[in-house]
Length: 483
Ligand code: 6PG
Image: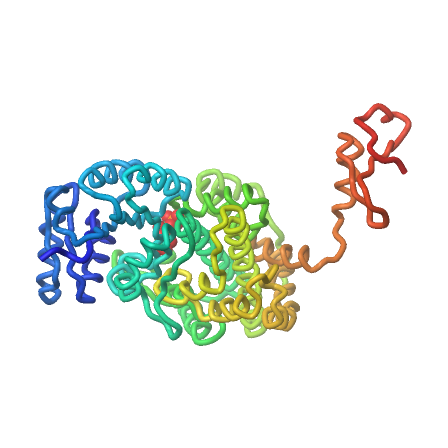
């Protein structure tokens, strides 16, 4: 009999996702460029309970083993490997068939591939997948974007294989091609922000409050039962409690080199934020923090001469833990507000029609940023799908106002102690900029007009104005209005 779906690309993510589909009763054909992985996957399917999975070593046989319209999921490395795989497989595919790329792909690549497949009438879907290897096997968050018809054909399978939360499976139709990759890209930007915020909290608790790893594990464990409940807080508690087996002394976390790696999706998020003229300072700060961490040798040198404050303020540990919990929560709200608004800008620009409430909902389970408060975000967008900013949702406004004194105390403490808290500080500045009816941008406009005759608008009159600012600068630009 023909298989329900095919999966090409059998690294661990691919193997796990194939087994996930098979364990939901769907018959799965698998194939891989190097055939050894095919045998390994078939073996695993046997071991995990004789799952309905058949291995193929030839692309042609693999494609021919699928029921029409053929659905082929790709889990190969993003970039050139995807193009090569599409070229190989599409040769044997027909009108109405569906290719689904699950890589962390730069969204314009998916848009291009969809176009390239148009003459053959093969439908192309870019589907973000989050949750790592474990999620792929037991229920990831799936973020598909492509033709609605393709989504409808995939839905019976992917709604079963995705993580399940109280209000449904962690997948939904996001919009046309590119939207799925985009939402996954922003997910990763938000992931960078969350991770950096947690790292800053760690820095303060360790270096100002003097907490050891056991206390940190207990604090994060405790936070994971309340408003901060999330996968990243949960794993952070586990990380702090992990002893170092390799040397049999101390904790692993203290032995890890302080240099953060990255694969690139976080950088794309910031590039895109700039492209869409949308502020994303928390995520940008997280990205910069990774870059600075990478300059380890320079920092070691600089640390010899660039001293910080010696007079570190004394604080009560209990008060600090309470304050920092509030500060982390407020900072997270700002970061998610930025992420949601970035998706909104792109969705408007590309006419994807992404439902932001649904977006928050499908992140509630399976993915790396899964968190209790995504339910509040979902509710905010259900209440008002056109919400300008999460900060002005009445629930979030109340939550922030209740905590802002704590938030400011923490940021002040960081500054006074010489502890860098770029993401938390960026979040607070975002809040303080957004909540001001009048910003000092009037002065920047005046300067622009002074040196470049870039003109300005006024608060008291309609129109565009330009000013001859002083006697020595009479010869600047065109005068389109005159005070
Ligand atoms: C996920 C993750 C994953 C990502 C890693 C590494 O949702 O499962 O986002 O897709 O590849 O988190 O990202 P960096 O190497 O850029 O930190």
